Structure formats: C-alpha cells, structure tokens
Length: 348
Ligand code: NAP
Image (cartoon, rainbow, N blue to C red; front, side):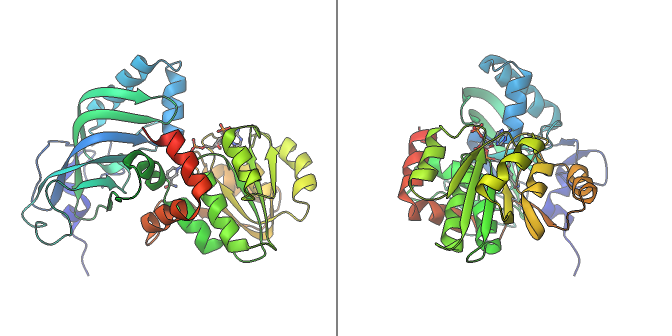
C-alpha cells in the first residue's frame, strides 16, 4: 500500500525539502483549505507545558514578552514548534472550510468547534493577533487560522464539559489512556508530576486499574498544593512524596519510606528536564517506565538505565492511543473531585 504524502501535509513544507511537517523547520501556513485539508479559525492555543514553561522562563515571566516570543516563533516557522523543547501543544477553533476531497467524507461540517489532537509542531498556523495569555495554564487566546491535514486527528468538543476544561484534558489525553492499558491489578505505581494535568488523570486511571490491593505514590515538589492534597484526601494516591525529581539522590533516599518494593510501573508526567534517572531508580527490575514528559532525553534514559544496570522497559509517551480522547474525557466524568479541580483551575 502506498502512502499519500499530501494526506500527511508534505505539500505544506517550505524547508528543508523532502521531510514531513513535524520535522520541517518551516511550513506554509497560508490560510486556505487545499483539497484534502481542513481550515479552522483558531480561538486558543494550549501550549505544551514543557514548552510554555521554557518560554515563560526565557522571558522572565513577562506576559508581553511571552506574547512577542510566541508571535515571532510562529511567524518564523509557520507553526508553534519550540526549538528548545521540540514540543508544541494543540488548538481549539471552529471549522471555516473543508477542502473538496474531504468534504462529505468526514464527520465534520463548517462551523463545528473542534480541538486538534495532533501537535502544533506539525500544524500550519497563522496568528493575526494575540488577545490574552493565561500564564498559569499556558493558554493563549488568539485570532488566527490553522490547517489540519487529512491524516490529522481532532475531537469535537463535548456538550457536557466546558471548552477550556475539555481542552486541558485533551491536551494530555495520551497519558490516562496509556495508564489504563499499562496498569494491572495489585501493582505498585509511581507517578512523577502527580499534581499536574496529566499526573492527576493518570492517578485516577491508576487507582481504577490497581484496585485496593495496589499502591500508588505521587511525587511532586510540593505536597501542600491543592491538587496534591486532593489526591491524598480522595485516596487517589496512598502516599505523596514531596521531592524534586531532578535530584536522584533525594529520590533514592526517600523511596524506601513510601515504596520499599519499588514500582512495577512508573509514569513520568513532569514538565522539567533531568528526571530520567529518578524514574528508573524508582522502578523494579523488569518493571516499566512510561515517559509521557516532553522533557525526556532518550540518551539520558538509555544511558542512565545502563549505567545503573537496571533492566526496565522504557516507553516513549506516544501522545496518541486509540480512543484516547474519549478515555481522557470519561476519566474526568468518572472522578468528580478531579473534575471540580479542573473546572476551577482551567475553566474560564
Ligand atoms: P503540568 O500540568 O504543568 O504538570 C507538570 C507537573 O510536573 C506538576 O505536577 C509539577 O509540579 C511537576 N514538576 C515540575 N517540576 C518538578 C520536579 N522538579 N520534580 C517533580 N515534579 C515536578 O503539565 P502537563 O500538562 O500534565 O504535562 C506534563 C508533561 O507531559 C510535560 O512535559 C508536557 O510537555 C508533556 N506532554 C506530553 C504529551 C505527549 O504526547 N507525550 C502531550 C502533552 C503534554 P508543580 O505543580 O508543583 O510545579
């Protein structure tokens, strides 16, 4: 079977020649729907957490400088592809037009509101103006357009969950879906970055899967955050370890207290670099580490495991799993305390 390169957006690549949009340095973001494309009016970008944190830090947390940075980045590359973290995010918007090859072939109509489920690192994006930035959540409201290719994934926004909340969940949909697949009854599970978006949804799925015989330990720098307390109070974690996951010695010293048997499965949901070794140290021999974090270094993970002679299976956090959007939204519906927290934190 041959691959239709235009369905993957190859025709939008400006430089270098011969690559697909995710790898490209620059895309053509011209706001027209070519035959197998969907053109959307974009309302908001949900910048990937690792990327937004890097941009915010590089600009001293100044909202105007962050806006100028995002504008310049998209202007230069025709997509929101942070060259430092390599990550992007997703958008929410409304379908403006559908190319003639796709029209009638997909379950989408002009006017539908959707969230993109493919990364902004491969999505042609044009920003006319930035209207507002929420520095706490990494949400950027814009006037602009984006193009989805025939291969692009999207989700219609659900009727029963506020848009901003759905967007926060869909951004990290891969994590709870993968935890649902990986976690087994009775297992011990460690979740780094437990009190963030993907971390909380992962805790909820882990709790469902391991059951009362299993053990879940959340890890983050501050156990007094509202989210950390929620996880403890509602039994999503059996223990919460306050630690900096970049400090492998601290993790090594603390872990016998909370998880002496080590983890069958470790889920890394942090938004900072340098946590590979801690994740590996936390995990049993023959256990599994799932690196959802975009700050993960393949080299640090591979050489780190080898360096401490740890035979663990390490999984790259594919942002996509079949049915991941539905699983992630259902996780929220099934866990009212987490839904209430997301609504307060990410709802507008
Ligand atoms: P988030 O809501 O910002 O949460 C980040 C978490 O990391 C928070 O719990 C934070 O704790 C914790 N953290 C920060 N520094 C830490 C440290 N030194 N030690 C331990 N924990 C630390 O992020 P998110 O939206 O869930 O995203 C999490 C990661 O997934 C990011 O790297 C993001 O880029 C990545 N991601 C991956 C995909 C994919 O397809 N694989 C898709 C979307 C996002 P505090 O709150 O206390 O700071």
